[in-house]
Length: 72
Image: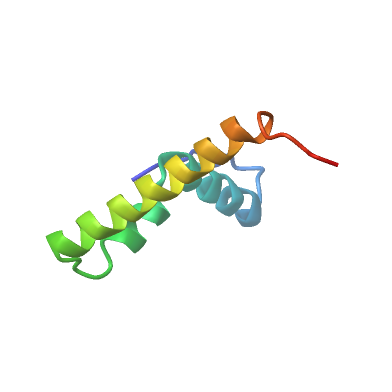
């Protein structure tokens, strides 16, 4: 859990913003959302495979974009 130091002259709102930024840097929120519900190992594998396929399609699309011929 990230901790912050608030000076005596700072307002609560500033401290809250600092804490939110520290939580974002530590990637706490995505981790909590990921662990909010149990995910079966098969579902996890399917999700990871789908993400890998999507990444592969994206890299292929980017790499092949300049090599296509236009017959106009």
